[in-house]
Length: 75
Image (cartoon, rainbow, N blue to C red; front, side):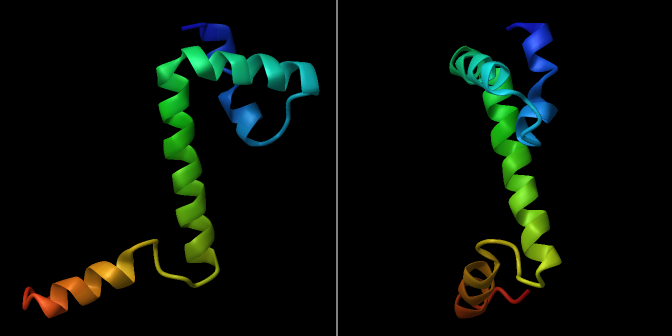
């Protein structure tokens, strides 16, 4: 794990890296499980936040609710 590159994760997600820095960070992701996992989590959170802002329910919520009702589990 390269601590210096790990610090660039926010800049990467905000598209604030120049082309060379972006390429370097992408290569880093191939070898750093910590950053790769953090990006998955942060991107997923961003998608969930974006859905809520649009008034849409979180991904999979409708399916979970109907499944719960169908199985008599209630909410």
